[in-house]
Image (cartoon, rainbow over all chains, first blue to last red; front, side, top):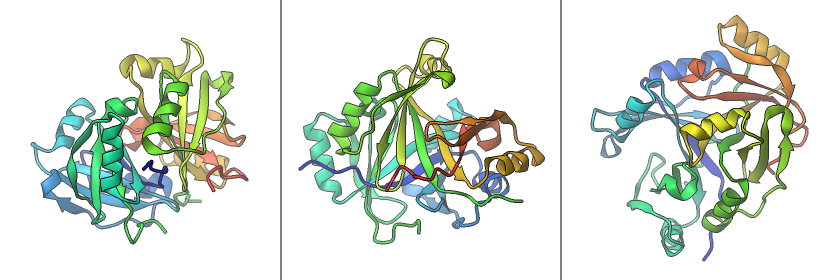
Length: 143
Length: 143
């Protein structure tokens, strides 16, 4: 089975402070649909979604020093774009397809911020860009 | 006037080879709506748009060694996420609003890849993320 490019669920943006980033988006871009930040301790991050009309920005802050995001912020102290997330209809089929084509899928699918299975693919397979695949949520988040 | 967060027109992704990146998106993600690459010599780049159902990926390759993208690729030889582009209703109003709020707008608006005025805002104003603002095109590109 070959996947079809799905919708861009979100752009993941690392930040040393979700609170500060939220104020920036509110002040400079007029963002109003801003979710409550919440912890994903299993993934070592706190996240907060900001809705654009057609997709979301996922602000990501380290949960603690062992967070994978902490390493990103050591290299990029101000923060920056971290990953893009595309939706797929069936995460197991997508993983099998990617592996068959030689891509490096990072670990097993796990439940992500929208409550459906997600998995990351190594940036070396996508021209230096970290790609997250997310099984399409029932509620897409952006309306 | 305060802006309202507009739709994410595209994610800009730098690449040393549009041709190679297009093959990656086709093979690994099933992309089918892939535009013809074209040159924007005034901006020092070649670009190619790939449609996702709700937005676009803009692949950006240096036009020559003086390209601003050439510097990005020296730091990130494989490529990577370069900017995000949000639509605004009125670029002049958006620029005036951003300047009034102390943001660093990079140069004057100029015509961008979709034929409407665009401008970039310094990454220091957006937590390390380069933000492009684009006056909403008549044809939004992604359908």
